[in-house]
Length: 184
Image (tube, rainbow, N blue to C red; front, top):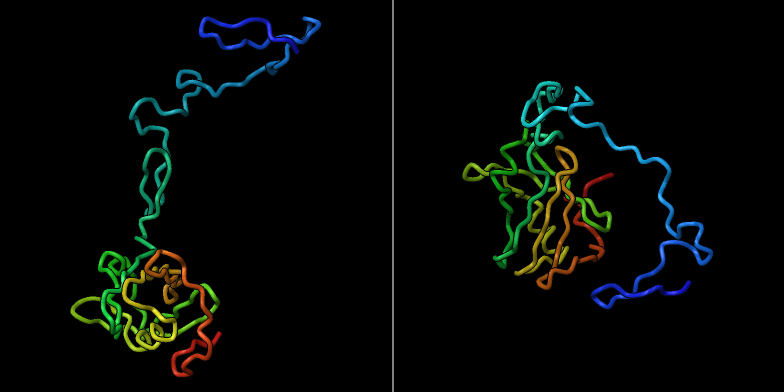
């Protein structure tokens, strides 16, 4: 393939056909199908008109033609600022979407460990109470660490611990305190 010439900016221009001058080097497909315009397809809503759009199910809201669940957030995180971790209050904006508050949560970490923590209402907030201090000690959660919680089921939280450098902590917790270890 030979270079034909250069354009006004001095950039080399490659030929559009093969060396025999017959076949294009980058052939276009014979037929390209474009989606119909609003005039061609009456189902397509025009402008901001909502006619023709189906109504979202009751627990969803429409946003730009797609739907979002209105169940609430599924994650929250806490930065550990105190040396003694007796309990962890859950954010109000997280718990206000609960249909019912469980009496205990099963905490699951990234190594497959499961741990039971009781739930208590303290100062109007849902709080991870009995079992949390032992969980934090066994999993070596320290000041400056960040702990993320993801709601897996109404009574199970996935817990991921990040150290003060933002690196995920992956450590086997060894032998569980039998009073709080969750049975599978």
